Image 1 (tube, rainbow, N blue to C red):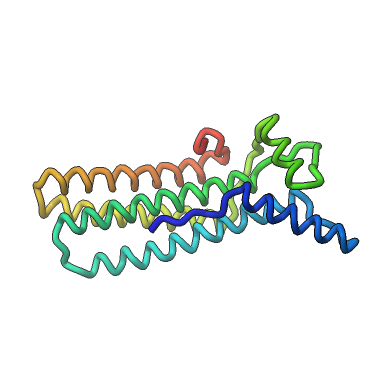
Image 2: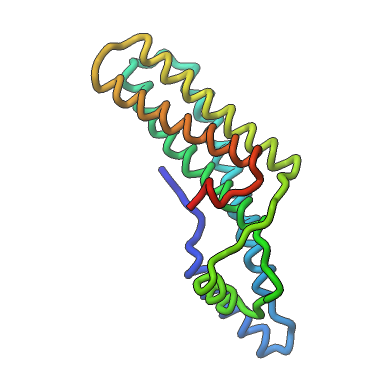
Length: 193
């Protein structure tokens, strides 16, 4: 089952309501920058949890002697989920690396309007040690998927198995390339659109 982080619009409404409630109580409202950073941190944490769950599933899957078709099918599903988690992780790292320029919006609505009008700009973001470790873990998980698909390909010559395993390998290769660019370039504009 593929699960993704909450949508920006729904979260924006929730934060605006909370900010309005705090304004009514004469408490300082959270800033848009804090909201954006918090959302990115939450998305990064969520993708790390998805990665951990996938690694456990892959370990369990590798312990069973399954038919090649089943192995290819499960590998393909896990590769798609891994790709989604890796993309969420990379997007959160990109968001954390954004240069908010000299304009600092007061509300999430102003932040959204600013990004919609001018588009985000990016500064060089050096990965933390934790981010590098997570990227390496995504790469290791993708390589584990490649091994599972290799196993299925060695044991079967059925066209369906070959197609499914090839698709899983392609998705896994995409995760490896994304993590390599994330670690090597520092700029994510060319990586994620």
